Length: 296
Image (cartoon, rainbow, N blue to C red; front, side, top):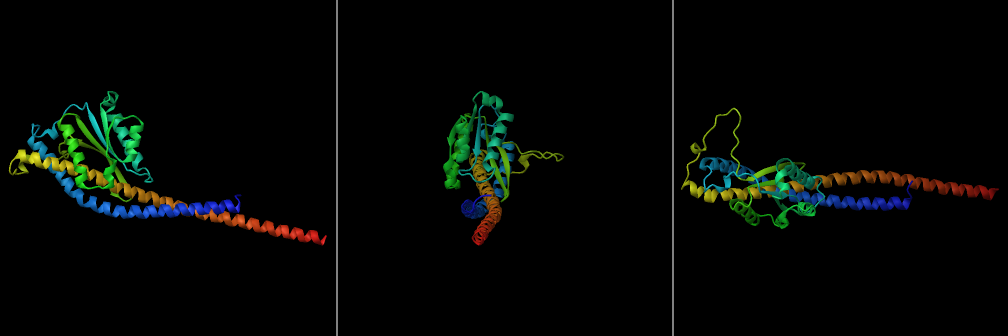
C-alpha cells in the first residue's frame, strides 16, 4: 500500500488536474455557445445558396462563363483539411486526418503516387501531421481560427477558385467536422470544385432548372457575381462548422476528464484513509507493545 505522503501528493495532483479540466470545459462551453449560434444562423442560408448554385450550374451548362462547373479528368487534386490549433478535444483531429487518408487511399491513390495531390491545411494539428509525413502541403492557414470572420476567409476561397479556374487543380475537396450538437460531430468529405450537380431524388420526375429561375439582369452576370459569392460562403461555413465542432468535442472531452478525476479522487481518498488507519493501528500496537515490555 502506498505511503501517506505519496497518496497526499497524488490527491493534490489530481485535484489540480480536475480544476484545470473543469476550467477548460467552461471556456469551451462559452466558445461553443457563440460558435453554435453563428453556424445555426448561417447554415440555412448557405444550404439554400448551394442548392441554387447547383441548379444554376446545370442551367447554364458547361460554358466558358461557368468555369467552376467544368468537369475535368481528375489528375491534379487539392485537399483542404480543417483541424484545430490545439489538442485536448478527443478524437476530433484524429478523425479528420483518418478521413483525409481514407480519401487518398480510396479515390486518389494513383494521383498520390504521381505526386499530383496537394494539401492546404487549416489548424496546426493537421499542418504538423501532413508536413511531418512529407505530404505536399502548399499552404497552411492556421491563423484563420484566431479571428474567424468572413472577410478573413474570403481570400482563401478566392485563391481556391482561381487555382481551379487556371487549371492548376482539376478537383478540390474539403475534409472537416460538421457540427451536429455539443456531443456529436459528423465527418464530411465535400467536393468544393467543380460544382456538383444537384442530386436527383429517386422516384421523382426530373425538373429542368430553367423553369425555376428568372435571370435578372442575365445569366452571365449571375455567374460572375452569385457563384463566387456562394463558394466563398461554403468555405466560411466549413470553417464555422469545424470551429463549433472543436468546441463541442473539447467540452465533452474535458467533462469526461473532470468526471474521471472525480472518480480517481474517491479511490485515492479511500486509499489514503486505509493507509492512515493502518498507520494509526501500527502506532497503537507499538505503544501497547512498549507498555507490555515495561511491565515485564
